[in-house]
Image (cartoon, rainbow, N blue to C red; front, side, top):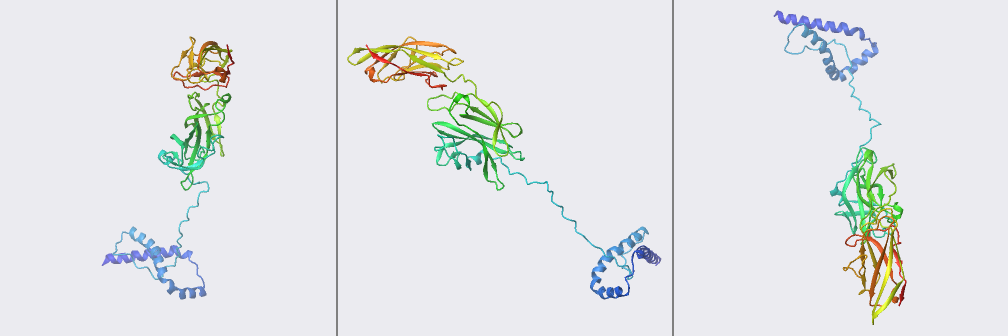
Length: 401
């Protein structure tokens, strides 16, 4: 069997080459170490044998394969193979990157979640504070529980106001009692997903129309550039019979880390063409008895428009006469649907003055009435425009003929 003889010769040559390469690196350990090694050999034989087998077989197998030999299995490990210790080390776990920060909570809150949410509403301005919901307020169907006058208005707007990589939610909260007040709030979520109030962007406050400085109406919000919030504001809070006459003015607000401050847009309101600035004066009213219980007299009323634009709508002149009284004039149109009947005239030009001659008839002794005349800008159906001051009223001196 010449093939097997050749195989044995190839294997012998391979192991001889392996010993020649390794032997120079193996140093004798001395007699004492040899005895100790022999005593310990039986305990580690199984472990060492498996390790040695893997290493010792490697080189002979490569040589064997290179020589083209064949075998039914790997050759037996020679008894005089050198000892090789192999140490296996697990890869070290990657150290955390100190610059890596947790992702910011998602502050994008849907309209559906807002409609039944609980969050902090800051205190309202003086005069509204006692009637509007404040503090931790629970909303049900967008209305404050137990206080339906406080509501979430319209659709939310989403802006990353604090530049943390996650958007916050901007909402308008209103409180309608006698006139509506507004707050623009920025909402976020904490690490546990709870809705929290980051801060108030802006709110309505102050005296309506006070020199055009105070915000009284808030219509809408929108996302601005670089995490800013744009707010559409006005200077008049409509109430009762007054119409909404506010100008629309966009102002921009940004978060400075502790609060929102205005960053762009105008800070005051200019002259408003929908606001009246009429002054009125009246001459002496002489009343003459026309029967046992009727009185009649004629008065001249002067109305001046002090504004830099024409008075809005129409000019209405009215008296605080008792029911049953009548008003007649060729200078204005009588409104029969109101009592006592006022009269309506056209707009007065900027800086203009108009004189009205009006005949009054009453069934009550006029000297028992504290008579006043009022001139005010109104809509066609009698809705009142706001006025800049209270000069549109004057006391009437009444005398008997």
